[in-house]
Length: 274
Image (tube, rainbow, N blue to C red):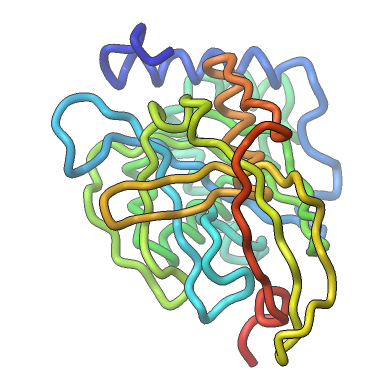
């Protein structure tokens, strides 16, 4: 599926076009999204692997540290809206040198759907601000590619609005206390059906007693790379799969026949460390 993309510009242009064709006719953002306490914006990052030669596009994710809720999960950088800070930053994003100013569809949005354009700039500002805080991502080094459909979390009252970006120059990140490490997953591996499985979870209390069992067939992606083994599941899995379906027409295999991976969550997963 990646063979027809020989370099970054060809892949970037394809993603830009596909996302625009997908979202232009549908509902964009709820009218009250910027005032919702449940709204979060995240940045689904793509870019070359910094340690590999040639063109190997990857999804770039954060692994959540043990200091936050959902420790150990892979996630996109992002978080909740900060009205004052993101209002200021969203104004900067309208400048011609900004990621939004360079986005080829920005002028059309501003003229044809000004309210959605304002919401988009605000949500993109949130995702870029949070990405800077979590991993020192240079916001002006991001090529904005568009946004994906929202995702509602199952365990938390939260709706996620994913923005998609490409990073080409930044090779190193400085993570804060919320992030254990940055994980690169090649698109080639994500497009291999043999790397998918089903996640079987149980919830334990602080004494190890089982409180609840999750459904047996939670879809997941199993990533192995040298000494690195990670499992991608939940809302971030759904965001990544949405992108793969749109861009490459990829459909993950039916979970019924896939290998099972076991996991145990405790109360800290929901509540975080106190």
